[in-house]
Image (cartoon, rainbow, N blue to C red; front, top):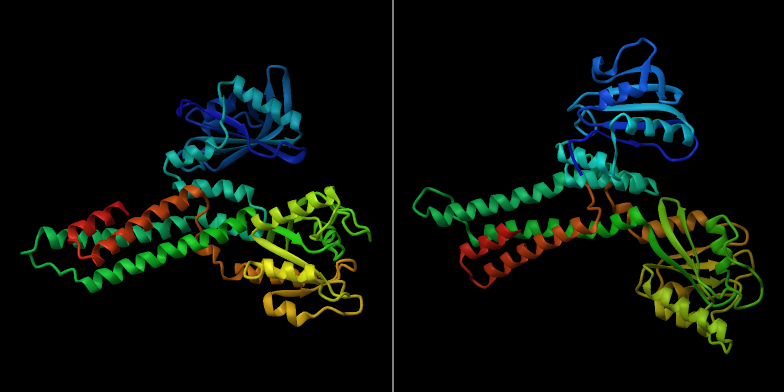
Length: 428
C-alpha cells in the first residue's frame, strides 16, 4: 500500500440519509476533486484556500450525479494532515457510490478501513492511543463509553501514561547520575526516596489497570445473566428490559429452555443480557439441558441478576442459588411486588447487599434496578475525563511496565546494586 497515493472513501453511513460524504485525502486531493466537481462560480478547488467551500455539481463520464458542496482543507491543517476535500451530496446510497466511483476513475485509490486515521497518526496529527480512541468513539454504545473515548482522543490517556514515563525517567536519570558520577555534587539517591518514588509509580499503574475493567464495561457492556428458579419472572423481566417479546412467558414452569440473548442499554450501562432456564432438579431431558446451559452462563457472566418471587416463601432452590452467587457482583431482584409479600427479605439481604424490588409484569422498578447496577459496578467513581486505557494492547503495555517496576522494587529490597535497580527501571 502506497502511503503517498491519494485515497477516497465514503465517510457517512451506507444508508439513505440527508447527507452523504466522500472524503478525499492526499497530495492530489484537489486535483482529483476538480475532475468530478464543478463549482457554480467556475473556480477550481486547487485555487481555494483551506477551510473554504463551494456549491456546485458532481459528475462522472455519464453525466451529472447530484448537487454537491465541496469543502477544502489544506495540509497540514486537516484530519489526516494532508490535503483533503470532502464532497457532500444528498445521502442516497446509489448517488454516493456513483460519486465515489467517479473519484476513483479520476485517480484516487479506494481507502482501506481506518486509513484516514492511520494517515493522521503517521503524519503526527494524533498519537496511537488517540487513533485507537477514534474507533472506540465510533463504536461507543452509551454516553459514558463515548465520553471515555472522547477523552482518550483528546489525549487524556496519552498525558497520563507520559506522566508515569516522566517519573520513571527522572528516577532513572537520578540513579545514573549518582552511580556514574559519585564525586560530583549530585544529590544522593537514598533508599527511602527511591522507595517512595517507585511506590508512587506502582500505585498509578495499578490504578490505570483497575480503570481498564471499568473502561471495558463502558465500551463493550457487561456480560449479564438473569437467573432464578422457574416462574419467578425472569422472562418477563427480559422482555421488559429489552422492550420486545424476546422470551416466551407462561405459567408453566420450565418454559424457557435455551439461553435468550439481547444487548440493551439500561440507563447509562450497556448490558449483554442472557435469559436462562429456571434452575431446578428435573427429569425432563430437554429442560435439564437448559438448566445446565443456565449454570454455565452463570459461571462465565460478570453481573448476575438473581430473581426471586416476592409472593412466595424462599425455597431450597432459592437458597442454593443465593449460596452459589454470594460474593459475586449480583443484584437480588424481588419480583412480583404487586402481589402479597411472603418472601423473607432479611435472609436475602444478609447474603446479597444489593437488592431491588420490582414488578416486571407492571413495568415498575426499572429505574431502581438501573441505579443499583450502576452503583454495584462502581461506575459512578469512574472519571472518564482522566483517561481510561481502551484495549488489550494498551493493557499489556501497562502490565509490562508494572512488572519491570515491581522487579526494581524487589531488587532494591534484596539489596541489589543501584545499577541493577536502574536496569529494571529502564525496561519499564
